[in-house]
Length: 206
Image 1 (cartoon, one colour):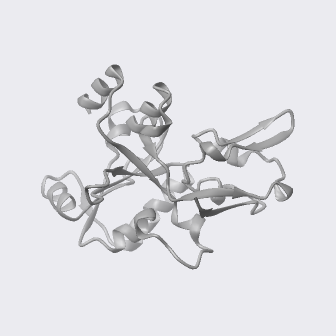
Image 2 (image 1 turned 45 degrees about the vertical axis):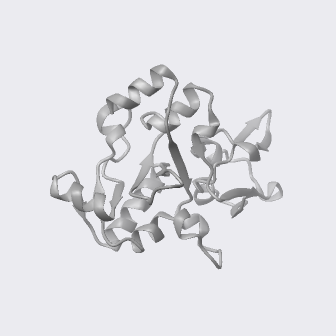
């Protein structure tokens, strides 16, 4: 974690993260992209293990749940051997992902096109180093978009502001009673979909 603090101070980062939409927000789709859904990545892994969030453990800036992050395959086996993670079945993994969704956490994976996914995090904006990079440095390119994006039916919106509270990327706004969806700011996490009471928001391919 020390190196992340150094990167923040220097304004440098060698690679970044990629948003993965939560399973619940894609439940009505007829097809999936395994790399875009945490549950499918885990299901297709040889092994996976549950661990505490390193960022929240270090910074302790919020009371969001800690044990909601995953390692896969060789990294999972290594972390379990070190006592830093524990193997869980798909049922517990799914429940942990639901807990992350309840608390408005965004699923990020360490993203490098030349590497396999080995870590899946559930991140908050107050502790996550990648989201901190993006906001403090004014660099939206430091976090790669998911392949999905929110689609909003404004005629069905009741302006309850639930999606605004959930969106840490600033894609939803309500000013002087007028709702605005800024499509260019949407990273495709799906948190707005699972909290919209009228079903006005859905996820579509970007």
